[in-house]
Image (cartoon, rainbow, N blue to C red; front, top):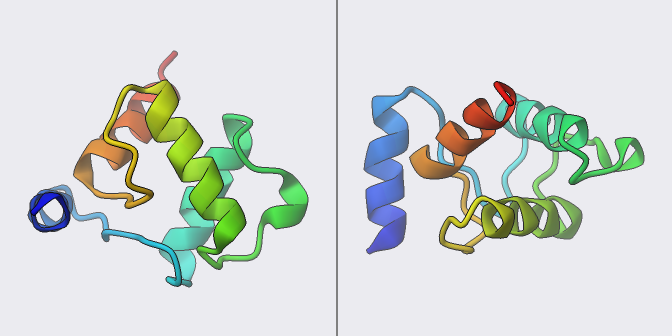
Length: 86
């Protein structure tokens, strides 16, 4: 159920829902944000949502008191955007 809510919500802000196994430019952008916030190291920057990216996303979600599911949907994207304002 949560994944469906995240999917619909992410579409509303025009960001794709990302999960383990995905790849491409959206994952590259996600990784850049996670590197900037210290959740991922630069040598893990490969545009592949793998185990390292999953661990970084889950740590970010935990720190932001989000549901820790490793899925980057609207709530996680919004938190990533808000984090850069701090």
